[in-house]
Image (tube, rainbow, N blue to C red; front, side, top):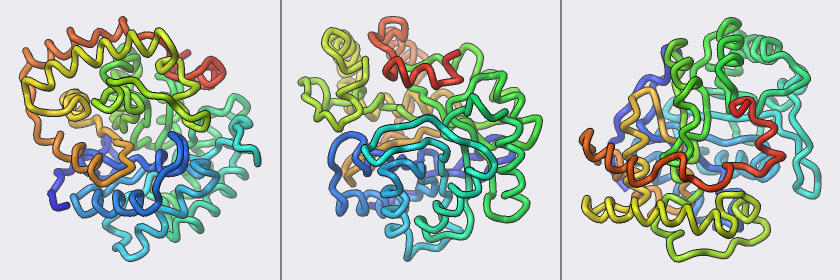
Length: 335
């Protein structure tokens, strides 16, 4: 596809990034089996459309995601790409998660393997996936800052941390962005975290803008999830919670129809309207889904239209937490 996405400054100290970025997590089994040919085509289409930000994690598919991206970008100019990588989440051979490790020596090890799998000699934005309860954030950020000085990392980011942690981290080294879930139905950052990020000049890379597919037309008829699909274990996709949430999606669909756009496009347009400091990360797995997302950049919504959207989907009427109980407990952003 061809499209020239605009770019914005990521925070006060970060790079210029495309108005939306590509999240690659879904290409490595998180939502069930993914088609590798389609995944590679999606990455190529995103880059060809002017997207320069690709987000991944070294634990997505236990390294599979990074190797996939590495193949996709092998013939691209390195300076045209911005790779955002999360580290620290521990996995076992059964696919289960075993906590998080952000000690300096662990970080250096993770970084080394990420660069090898991606086929690059530096990472543009490097971030711990979660706050490690056993390692002060100052220690982790300070160690990544050493990698910045050494040339292996260009910028430091954070993920799913609260306002206090943001302040502590920013006191050690400039933080380019905070990656955190933010959507029409996940608006918890608005009370304290977003104002703090703005005060500190930290950008927001918003994931979950489509709430893992809930805010789309594809979910409205109901769907069964494989046990390997994250949504099979997510409270918002369970039983009566899903029924209640789909009623909100139906209300959003009615508004989308009046604009001749899809539910997903309206949800992305809403996120874009929150400010130029908020960059949605869209987890497309197929070229047509990326094309749909890229077209949403052109949607302009008036204040009255935004008010109607928010009235149709009140955040306090969303049923279920965004993660299961054990995972919610790991989120510094929810404390």
